[in-house]
Image (cartoon, rainbow, N blue to C red; front, side, top):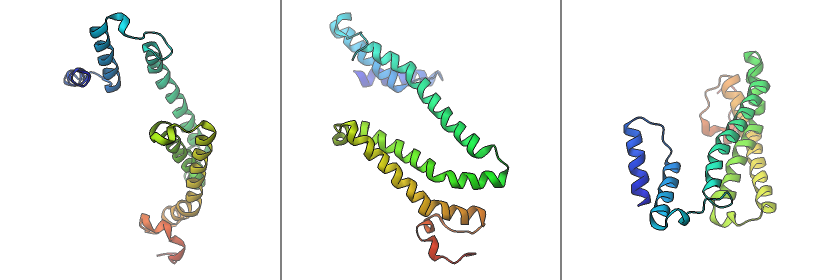
Length: 175
């Protein structure tokens, strides 16, 4: 019932080119089944673990993700993009390890705290250090492999395939 109801609504909204959220449609379908099966009292309406908490998250999530994305973009803008081309290129390449740390750390944190079933049970005192360690690992990978390869490929105009970043030091300069 949930899949049919939410799927039908997403299809109808798509046909009429309306903006639609599959997640919202599924929550609405579950809510509709709860009310149809048990009446208004069959749904937990309050904030803590109830429908109101879901509705609040629909407003908080876009605002917070927009704010965080703006902060990350502004860091790129002020640390890299606001400089003349040659200087911006050098600064961008030097910032790669930081952005690798940030990107891989965020993905690792999401996977550990929300995705992997066994890791979801870990306390934050375990998952946060592991997340940071994964981010540091990939930041170091950027220092060792990506930055030198990017310098040779972009700054020095060498035609090195992407996979050579793992053994770039063994390829003579100017290849």
